[in-house]
Length: 159
Image (tube, rainbow, N blue to C red; front, side, top):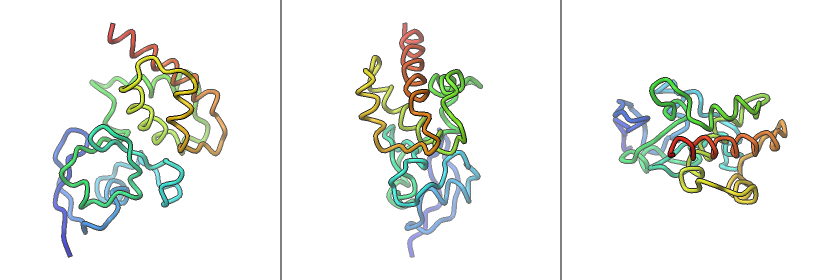
């Protein structure tokens, strides 16, 4: 049985001891205590568990630790810089785009990747990219508003 002894998470190499077939989600939550990444459906259908792998959104409930051991993993805990929230995190707060909050980290992580690739997205682009992220509370209008606000904030920062 192959073992994985370390991962590159949120900019740091961290020690773990995991079976290579364990899910990334279980290692993040149970070994590294990074509980911002949520267990939703366990089948890759709701996107609550989304993290970035080398900058691309990936459902951590479906990713095997052995397959991502040499890649850069970013969780919701790793996107703030110098104590300042990522613009999309701030926009979610400003627009009250969360209710129960369970889907929020997955929404934000998917959105971070999207906004890095699309500085001025249309509403249709946002809807299309976020299609697989499920919000059981139905705050989609506020989520769209948060994306628009974050895109604007990021354009201003890029200046």
